[in-house]
Length: 319
Image (cartoon, rainbow, N blue to C red):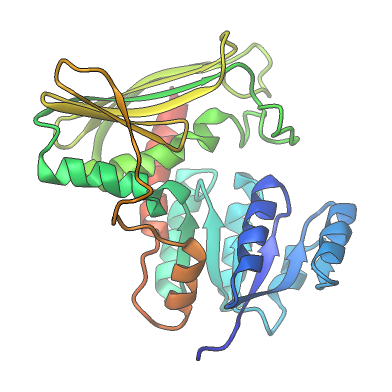
């Protein structure tokens, strides 16, 4: 039996807390230390975790000898510094998306991860779920016919969303829905259809130059010739709606609001698909990370995919 893997967690916000609960469910993982610049949050989380060591400087956590890997859940502008510091201390890394806050930062992180030979994994939740493999099966089998159009819709009544009121996520420097939401679907697009040839983007910004975008209309052309329409909007009436749709000549398939899979045959209405009883692959990020740390084959999205996403993301934001 392999030894327990010890993780150090940098960033204790909404996303960090979500994965803390996943780490706690695993019999193969132990939280060795935590870090957040907000000392009260760090103290409170430490208490909830039965007194694990807490820090306000990530460098102190990374230097802990008994930490096997670092989970990076800080805002994007800090990813580069934390990841590079972890690599310097010979620590494996699991990083939140997007990989970095610029193309150059992402390239530095990828190169360093490859040079050190350390594990460099990313948290793209959709990549591990049945919905992705269902869509991939339809694409690979040709069930959709000729693919005519791909459409990514991201509409929000307000941004930041009510449950996501953090200081940075509504700021132009590292926040906004393009950085926060689009990477999930860019990763899927690249995994399903291959490299991007060209991005044409028009981004609507508010007058306040510190505030994140209000909308985007973009076209992503793949090397295969396929085109993706990206439609993002903040401030419309109605509920939040995120939809990733692939339209084919014989069948279309959509992933609505992260979890709902639907298909429509030619000339017919959309029907929801129940994936719960299927034998499609479904991976646990935590379990796969443990396998990789044990030197076994594992299904993990790495910094190579994260950097490919980063390059497209930067072109979307340039608009």
